[in-house]
Amino acid sequence: MRGRKFYWELFWMVVLITAALASAALAINPLVYRAEKTREIRQGVKQFTQKVEEVQEISDQTQESMPYEELYRSIQTYNEWLVKINQGNLTNSVSMAIIPFTMTDYGLPDEMFGVLRIPAMDLEMPIYLGANDENMAAGAAVLTQTSIPIGGENTNAVIAGHRGWNGYPYFLDIENLHVGDLVYIKNIWEELAYKVTAIRIVYPDDIDAILIQPGRDMVTLLTCHPPNTGGRYRYLVYCERAEE
Image 1 (cartoon, rainbow, N blue to C red):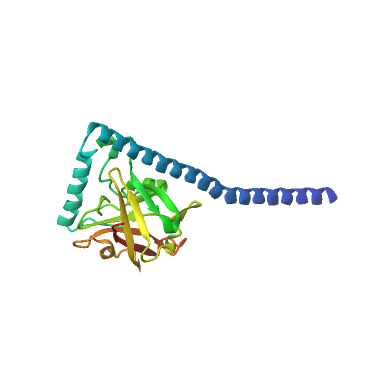
Image 2 (spheres, rainbow, N blue to C red; image 1 turned 120 degrees about the vertical axis):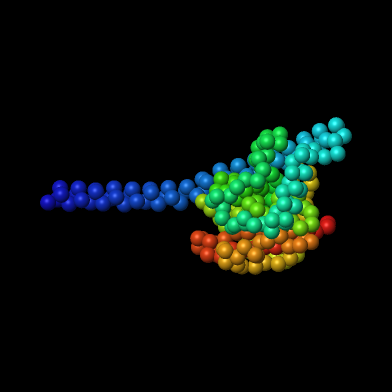
């Protein structure tokens, strides 16, 4: 009997130790992911900044009026086309997003379009075109069928970000943003400044809430709300072009 009791005690001790180790692994895994993702995002931002500096230096040396002019004009045409079709295929889906442009087709080294910087959130991360799962894991992403952020009248670039995911914050702290705060977007050609003008919470199918507004130059930040609820609502931060 004592031998049998000993083995049962040993068995349950092993079970408890195994469960404790599994719980520890689950707790550590998000921390590991966050550290790795932080490194990747910082590296991506650094590389993009270096790329912009190199582009500007080459442009100055060659006296080009605009680097990657073909890409810029194509984006302008795309933004104008969205207005003409009234964004007819707009959806807030992030799983089947169509990528409107492939950066490497225009001679760029990777698919990063720019950098989003929000001082009030202590946030700086890459921007990609097309809000699919891969791009949103890598940073922020421009929602398909919304304007690409190069500025201009009749534009509204809707930039989507996770409300925290796998231990990395992304747009988790978006409620730190208030009316009057500034949001910056650096693309290959310039850095654009936008000022927060309004904040709304809407249902996921409220497409009208993210449409282009005639005559306005806008950026709209979009994420799920509340955090960790599976996207019951959408949290929107409307921003309009600001002259600093």
